[in-house]
Image (cartoon, rainbow, N blue to C red; front, side):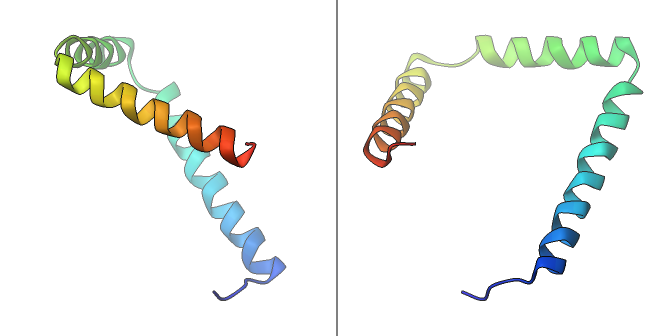
Length: 73
């Protein structure tokens, strides 16, 4: 794997800071009614999760927990 220079790392970090700042700006400037529609859509999607999906989700969470324990993260 190729290592990067300090300058490249700083440029990478600066690019992601720009992206994060842009997203935060968009969120701040989104009208309240749009945010409410988005929240409503997320709530509806969350209610539609099947028992099978929830069981699989729990299995994934258990695997991550085990990985974290084994790697002391």
